[in-house]
Length: 308
Image 1: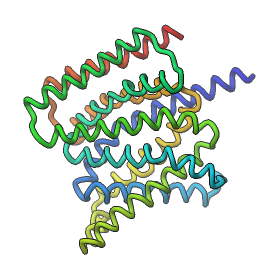
Image 2: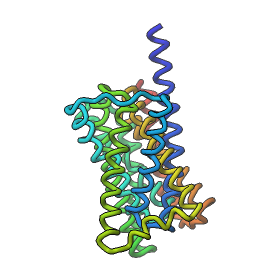
Image 3: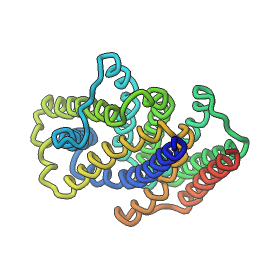
């Protein structure tokens, strides 16, 4: 009976990660849409305001129980919240000012590289030569895109891609350290701390900046645009809150390196979303690099299952 229960939990974890990957892949598109109407910190503030409102509705309606955390537990969760959502979403949104949703999705594919290495060192997770070769291929794909971008595309795209990579490092550290901590808390409690902290920090930055420059009306003005509201609801409710629940639940049952590999399918979703929704154009080298990345992911996953 316990075996069946454990298998059901594992299945739910993998389904949750698959849904999270889909949502995150399209989130790049919705961030780009939101950035048409507001600056990065305004987008982040409104995004997490929507997430907080959604979370409060869950508490008020009794769908979920209110968090019960002591001071020590709260501070422990705050420590990992710096990596995710603060640095991760902050750097991601800033980076998307300068690069396309499609390129951001491809750049995010480097996530398994650092996760694999740090998981081996800190979590003692073992990996095969085949997995390592898959990761190397993914890294080569990212390197190829950067190399070709430097010769074909100048300026903002390179800077944006670099900032996106910094956001990737943030989520990697969260995967590594979060898995150890998350096992001791309810998923909804972790999500509560993360979302409330992000809402406070990004609102202080955004509102403080507008007050300093006398432009408070610019903070409210985007709310008159239906496209902005739609983007914020998607980012705040689905991409911020729902994916946090999925990720935190999955980290309890799935090895950190596998979580990152599943998330690495986001480039496909981001590329399709960027082309179909935002009418973005990619060069041949983008597709070659993306193919290398995806083949590396498939190879890593294949050797993981074979080793199991």
